[in-house]
Length: 293
Image 1 (cartoon, rainbow, N blue to C red):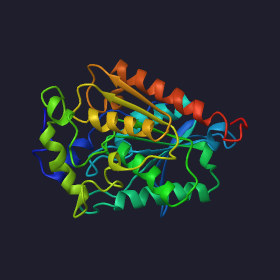
Image 2 (image 1 turned 90 degrees about the horizontal axis):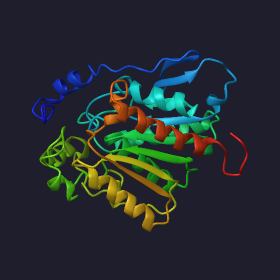
Image 3 (image 1 turned 30 degrees about the vertical axis):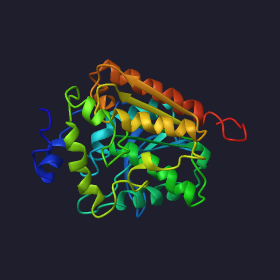
């Protein structure tokens, strides 16, 4: 029911979203492995064979859930398909949630996880960041934080309906209020307060639509045309192009927010993930020196 999560307290919201029924896409030779390290807390979808080419390539994934709910487990329908179809290991980060851990806790966890992958020997050119909704905004914020800290950047980033404007200033907040099957426009700014705490809604590391995107790697963005968050994607795309960043924006018709998670039952979800996987595979096919992946 539209806005049903908004009308519940956060604990009830977490209980509801934890029951997302769609599991991983199973394939022979692949496994789900939970990791509980100090920086890498989450779960891997990876090949079992120790020398498999996919082990050299990594998708670092950030789940959606408005920064207050959901987990790597709820997003296995997405992470498993991205891993299998792009032939890359996937690590979904179990980042700290608000309101117990407001901004910048999730971003700090994302930075720590990325640096832990590098320290473990993963080449940055073999990493693609990905995320949906709040996780998409987090992936973009991570790129900005890494660039500003002079860290080596990953190969690219895939953003599914990213939540990039916690100030809720996009025109689609109003124009798509009646057409969005999941959220009303007024929900966005209200929900943002849980994550922001005392931070400004226009802080570019919380709302990367306000950031300078110069120097970022290629972006691949998918969003539904009826979403209240449509302009969160459209404005990021426009800002990226103005900054000289390679960017692709796909606006899908007649799909709900986060439709990729429904891939087990929704053909559009599978098609979207196939296209995202093709982008990831192409970016990981060779490193920046042109050596084969």
